[in-house]
Image (cartoon, rainbow, N blue to C red):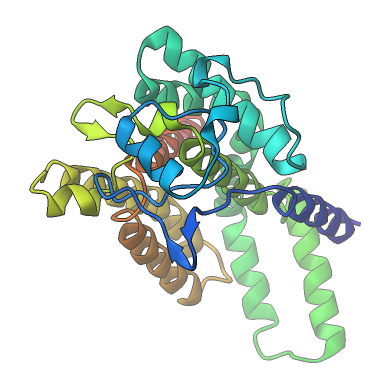
Length: 306
């Protein structure tokens, strides 16, 4: 029954993700970048850019930006583009724009929007974080179970092992699927923020402190703006600290092995490498989101200690 629910949820998620998405701006087969920021531009921006250099790029590549509303006048209900874009990306962009107008900073707006969404989802993600603590409590019994069936590979023995394991899970109120919940939440959120940022000129034309939100760290570093190294370092640190929690939980699990460890380090390398070439605004979102997860996990652990 649980596997059936998981398949249905995955199907619905795929349906949303495959209906409407960002279109990369191309000149023939060549991807168009903003030479000043290094950002890969999107063809289907949702509102008019204001920087002359950006306007010239779109006009040169035959994108009719005159038909677009200004970012202040943008409404998410106009021009239906599919479930994913119309239900997630455009409303998220609209929220960032409105909060950014109030704060007079779209960089701060990304931070505030991220925190607000994570607070709304806190009851769900908290349950997921608590599962790892419950697994730690069940680890002694799970270890004994592994030793009991260590050399028993018959179908009957494996079925009995699975049944006994489910009894242990029930005893400690462990939901085997709960660990997938965070991934199902984090991935759509990351994609939605990524698309909302790249499709909204008001966001990627703005600045936060020393960082141009549309500029990639690699472009900044090449231009001698070495402050962008700090952004990459923060992305790396926020990610590795967040991953350490998962590695710690895996080390407490009887089904550990080295595969999960290598996979997490591989993901860390990919994320760090990618952080050089994504818009700084996306990196800021990633840092804030991971910091929220770290604080949430610390709160759960502290509650268990008490």
